[in-house]
Image (cartoon, rainbow, N blue to C red):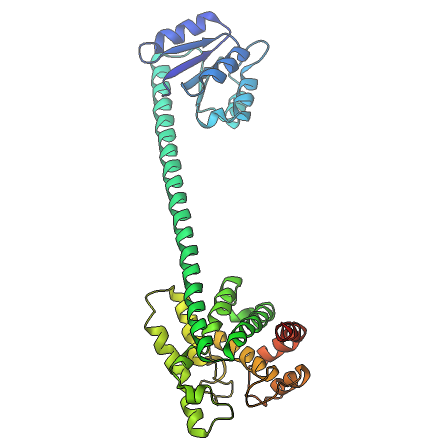
Amino acid sequence: MRSKILIVDDMELNREMLTAILEDEYPVVEAESGKKAIEILEELQDEVAVVLLDLIMPDMDGYEVLEEMRRRLWMDKIPVLVISAESKVAAERKCFELGVSDFIHKPFDNAIVRNRVKNTVDLFTYKNELEEKVEKQTETLKKQYRLLAAQATKLKESNVKIIDILGTVVECRNLESGEHVKRVKGFTRILAEQAMKDYPEYGLTPELIDMIFSASALHDVGKIAISDGILLKPGRLTKEEFDIMKTHTIKGCEVLEHIEDVWDETYGRISYEICRSHHERYDGRGYPDGLEGENIPVSAQLVSLADVYDALVSERVYKKAYSLEEAFRMIQAGECGVFSPKLLECFSRAREKFEQLAQEQHQS
């Protein structure tokens, strides 16, 4: 509790006069020099409500006391009223530059001293109490933020677990999906990071890429609703069978819609985009909606190219794996459907990383 008044003056008479004016309302502490004032403040800095300071003193004058108080940041909490016979405007200006709250000229009027001290103490008491409240509220907000951040992290982990579980379900049904899902995730991240670097208009960020990378595991989740006779057929599908296979995009979205309240909204949206639109093509000849150009969500475009690339460089029951060079040429030539010119440029620049990952994955 700040209640004490510190009077600093080398003249005993002046100290006695000020004490007589203020002692009925405040406990008074006296210092006969600047050095003594600093010693008292070191001990009582949390108890002093205001300092009444003379300027002209031997050894350590009032200016030096102000400099030392400012250096130690005491003036943020303890106001200083200079009471001096100094009449020069420059001296008064310097005091205010050093942070004093008021300047009272000698000889002083008792009532003026009493009222100015009271006003200053009341003002700083309110200021200090307000700052303490703000500090407490800030700390409360920080604690709430840390709690929300922890909850967000936990929710993100839950999102990833949900996706991994659904991806595992697909792996169990489709014998070639297991490693395929891992490779598609890797190719998707490589392409997305290149696109973020080359084309900022896509609005990709590291956080968004993490979500797309994770959600890409769900691109074929709808295949859990496709019959084994079609899904596991050891050969090319008939037109009728392929039409049924194409419904995995819609069926996958139906699966996701049943769990939309379980995970983060952004994760859900990106997962839905990828699941539904990863077979759309830039020229509008894809499925299921025939989307064209940039109407196709960028998340789906990224996964689409990654999915096709992996299909080309991997051996399937109905085909041999194409060489990395041939797979690159086929995609650039549009032999596997038309892709965004921008993403094809990114694919070209990231070719080495694609091929390195493909070799590592197929060797393991």
